[in-house]
Image 1 (cartoon, rainbow, N blue to C red):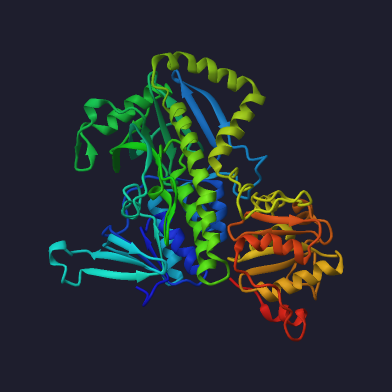
Image 2 (tube, one colour):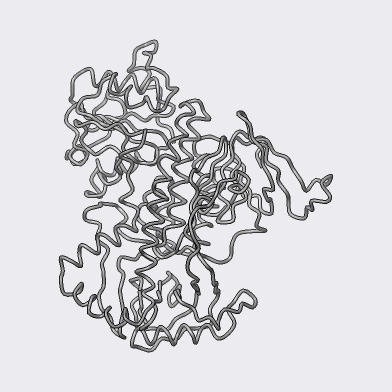
Length: 565
């Protein structure tokens, strides 16, 4: 436990671990607590989508996650006892260096994240439960109960009052933080599904997620990296199987799953004894706001929804990253408190849209009636035999799950400009994806791993553009990386682009510029870098220093700055 943390993160699942990692990476002391006795031993989430892989790359974790899981690039649909259509992942309109979903147990993802935060000096305090909080304009007072404590013995050391400037609640669907902040979950209850992790003997290739309609309902199969092991999902478990004993549904789960899948696939399937089963009723709910004073919520603490499209963990990780860089910048005095308002302004609409898309996905996944069983082979046959329709569905369905379409064009941090090359609010990583191995593209990928903002400007422009970049590097270097695309010695932070491909992808003319947020989204850009346009782009940050030319001139200051992160 740090002597005095700047941020208390409640909940050590993937969302809380991401928040702790990004706060610590930016120099903040973090305390990370979780009410559980230790790491989870079972996994709800199993999919890490492309946009989250891009985020993990920024965190330095993508290679580890990809190496620990199985890459998936397809979604195959069975109905009427035969394969109907295979939808290949199509990211041609959303370029990414990770054009696949990684299938990996949530427990393994959490393990990799715990290792990453430990490398930054943060360790999970297990068995520490938040029981209450109070806050004012300067601090949050959290009441913590340590394992073994009891409320009637408050004089014992098992209880602790901990004062901290900020608190982030990542404590799941039953969030104590959310309840203490009196943030309502608005929405509705929905369906009961059953999950199982089990060995499966089947002729199916483990290179796809499988959707299997059995005649009156649908099931899903997801292959793990471990050969022969699958995640199974039953969208309509029978009512007479609802009893639970020892954490498992009563009855023979293996034979039930095997019989249903075999009928839907039209081929034998042998399901072994499940390692884990869970029956749950999921909900479709979200909070109307994600901040109350100095406290924030993220992930399932802010929204709960159907697992149909595998979005929950991925969305929570994106939220934690979004919040962490903003909170760190405000806490370190590099931005005004108004920056924190953009967290909810950006993420609440995404959560709202997610509820709508997962509601649709839930309906499409289930298809729980006999008429659907008759019509599905006909409909899917049309999709199979019309390549343009199939490609459109591939881009719509699989692209929608990827997270690559999330953008912030309407964010208060986005400065639209008709002269901007790449669209403000869009993913900067797309510009590095079309030419892997190119020095400029690889340079941008490496640049996005820097925890600071990035100001890129194209070499060979008017002298005023270079002078503005030099002054920005001198004034903002602690929280902004300034790079000259195609620059040479003497330019601030030369970023090699010998073939001009990066400038082409960013649509940079000589002297043109693009400003990239720490989470990899473009904030602003234009045809010519100058003090006025840069000041306008940075105005939403509030309290930022005006560039002051240091003694010895801007060139000396840039040489002394070096690189951070």
